[in-house]
Image (cartoon, rainbow, N blue to C red; front, side, top):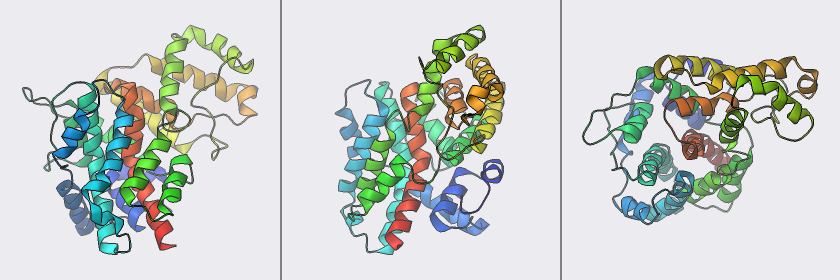
Length: 331
């Protein structure tokens, strides 16, 4: 990211620091970070009409479908966002999008489960506030575990940007018509909705549940070799060796399990990885685990349902989309 190794950022930075880096080209100084965090916190609330908009979706609607719709509708709340020639307005709407996408995502989750909405808490950090909006309740006090907060920070950092993929190209393509950033972001989120992009970690989870037990891994590997099934979460168009993000996620998974208890699917995943890294069939094809291989297991352990996985991808990727959009506009 902007010349910084992803391993250093994942270990030492917060998601908001990395979002600032992507958008501005350098990591923020202490005073810049304080202003940025306060700005993001101040934009976390959404107009009450958003609740009425969400009420139009039936109970149980897919959270990503709702998120795409609400992001597109947000442009009607801010007509001045069409004035993309104003640098001041574009900075304002960039901050609004980075902030509000998390609030909207939480509202979509709560609505799909028939739960009362939880409003943002400006006294909490970005990831801590997001977990609070997901899991708090009016009649009980939810205390986000620091280890889970850190895990979410790491996952958000790893997913914040990644070259000219499907959704990023969509963001640039829509933005090239001088559409407002909300409409462009909604289009990018729609591209992310697909199972070959934002739904990849869901596909991994389904594969692991289909395998069911470590003893079934060898037979599944044989089915992969005979082209009966796909080995989900392996291979990448950019990485021809081990995806550096995957090793970070694997370490994060072990830290999360110390809090949530061990997810039995991790044993299946590790056995799949072990065989694939030793078998010439996979090594010769440069099929190594990618970032999606372990992330779904972590989200499941944290109590997050499968339909939230692409939403959890969209929240941090909004910063990357906007950074790419700003670069395109400046070019």
